[in-house]
Image 1 (cartoon, rainbow, N blue to C red):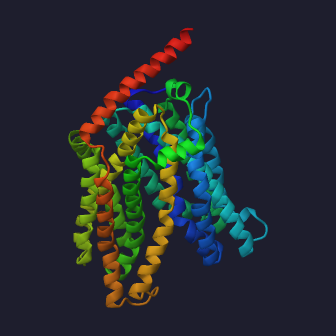
Image 2 (image 1 turned 30 degrees about the vertical axis):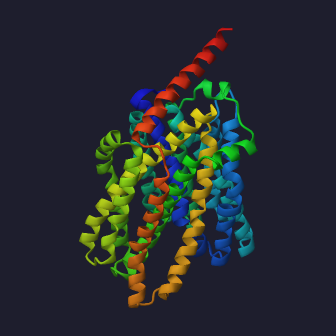
Image 3 (image 1 turned 60 degrees about the vertical axis):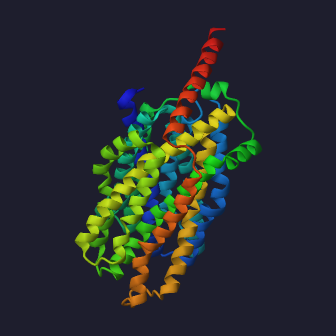
Amino acid sequence: MLIGRAGRIAYGLGNFGKAFFYYSVGAYIVFFYVDVVGLDPNLMAVALSIPYGIWNAVNDPLIGFISDRLRTRWGRRIPLIIVGAPLTLLFFWLLWSPGIIAAKSSTVLFYYLMFSLAFFDLFLTMLTTGYEALFPEMFEDLKERSEASLYRELFALLGVITGFALFPYVRSIFSGFLDVLNAWSFSSLVLGGIGALTIFISLLGCRERKEFYEIDKPLGLVEMVKLTLGNRTFLAFLGADIVIFFLWSWVPAMIPFYTKYVLKGGEEANALILGVMLLSAIFWWPLLRKITLKVGSKKMFILSTIIFVLSLQPLLLLNDLNLILLAMVLVGCGNAGIQLVRSICLSDVIDEDELRTGVRREGAYIGTMIFFERLMYILLGVVSAYLFKAIGYTPDVPPTPSVEMGFRASVSLIPLLALSAFLVFMKFYPIGAEEAERITREKLKLHAEKAEKIKSKSEL
């Protein structure tokens, strides 16, 4: 087992695989099944909404509940990763391998996609819950958490880039000697295998403490739900997190429309805009971590979101791609800060809850958060459908002034409205820098008491 900085880097490596699985499906699954496989778009929409809507309502909170109650010789979280990683890889490969089924009618493809996606999401949630729940347990103060978060987000960025850019590139290589369906299938197996490997390597930096699964008494399902949804601190964070997840979904979804119908550009311009936003984070993270250590995670969360949204406002008026890219550097700054401290804020919520209940319940909070984050895909569809109708958008038709202004507003004014909601939620989030330090002191004292109980128990 690796400890210290090596351990934190190893743990962070697991975020590469997790990000790759999630974002490659989000980026290409619709295109693959509609354009390549030939599934009816209406059936595609239903096949996506059932796993990400109805199924997640049960799947995500339940996995979190099971995670908190699990008792094994290897702990509570690590078994979820060990089981979840290979099964996530299996169903990831199946998602991109409809060629293995003999009948390829729309009905058969619909059920194949729906069930493959449901099981993929189940095991990805298992993997994600176990991985994310280790973060607040292993890293106990702001200094450790901010460093570990930096490594996590760096590897996540590489995973996102692999999912967005390398996945279609590898597929194109396989297309040179395989038919189109087998090219998608083999490329998913190769890159998915790499993603799963990084997750297993990250276990070298993972550890669980016996006092949290031998001393803590697990809560029942009803009590867990009551305490989780009755925690006002968590609800304030959850509201802010939902807004952030909406922004993370909305802005990348609208940028291609903005590029095509406002800038009259193509895929290269679209890639440049999103690439600058993502890659500039690498240069901002070291500085933002230093600022976070001085001002605390709450202030950095608020400041970063304000920078992110306000830096998008020039897109309401700009037409010059170079100036837009400069604005995206600042957007990337805000995005980097959000990525750095979002998990730290949730960790503070979990620490505060432990002081109140005496039990660490990372699984319950992370499972609940994942469920609401997934619902943002539904909100994304509703808001975009309303926008397209309101501005009179028609695909591949030269834009009218209302269409052009609509897409300008989509990447500037709609995020501004979201920022207002974010600030309201953060007003009710009570854990500032001083409160976080107090919680950390009391938490460490409580953990020392639990460790002493474990020691006394082993000596008997």
